[in-house]
Image (tube, rainbow, N blue to C red; front, side):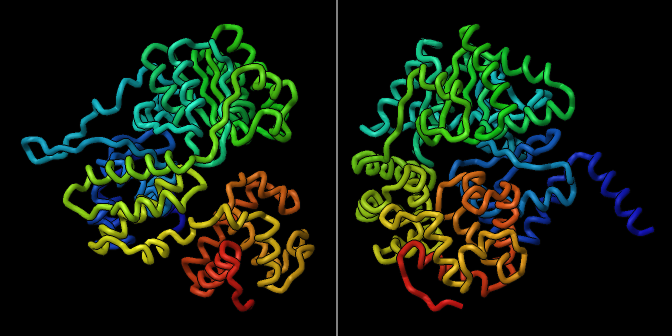
Length: 473
């Protein structure tokens, strides 16, 4: 009887609009008053869509901090009241008080979005264009200038380079360039910016709902198709077939196609040869790892950007900027992350960190390239740590003494390498990507509950990253 009452209440809740005051109180209770006052209080509710909510924060720094640390907990709190909500989107909006002391959202900051395939009442209910990722704030150097110039050229003369194919490692700025192209062209054209993973999701959904006509019409009527991380389309034959025909239809009508990937077209695995040939037939450009001059420029720009947001607070010294520029060489994203960490440390402790403290703050980012972390290395070290053989780890056996080491190795692979979920699955005896996701979530949950798990993960990370020998369990 009680269960029936609860279910009815849940149904009623799902039919009502979210009460943001209730959500705020829950965030304060579950995450603590200090965290709430410092960060979560700055979140404001804008609107609810079919399966997600749109929230606002005043700055990019606050958005990045909340996203990296509290997003999962906030989403879970919201899902307790509205189970249909599956994700949260943030917009950066200046918040000013009106005459009555109420927060006034400056909706003008949404930029001109009517020409973008946007979220509300649209078929996809999805949009990835970020108004903060523009050509103006894409810093260039010898490693990425060609990709930058080619992207600019596309906005001046569409279908001149068609397709434009940009490839680079994780965190090098591919998505920033696609986003900048979309921002520039949406003023005059119908733009679709989507990830390959999302394209796949919509394709499968359309097949299940017997709605492929609408799917084809939607994608083939766009003027500009920007598709991110095309490597995730690997192995999906039916979807590749549809993508190939969509690709040809867009080329025939003079639409511009821009594709990003983590490798060159001929290196794509389990992608049809005719698709790879199409990619190679356009302009193919890559983004190399940033050289010292570009790294220094990025660190200085990001530091100045944060100093403008917090003019009366701690600044990063030139010595620390120099250290970060020299030591973080793997990707632009890691450089920006390093600056964010140091600034956060400075704000929390109200002091400029010393070099020794900076090394501790950034320890998991330092020397990653020198250690050349591979999945094989992770598997070997985890097997030795738990005293099992690699054959046992990779077997289909589900004994507890094998499952936990296997999940631990998968988790460490996810956080210490840039491999995609399907790639990780293949290296663990062709396990499905859902198994990889489950393993990662299991270890994350155990870390919250079990101090021994945290200690073991830290020991293994030290061994993998720095070759520090710890006692096995």
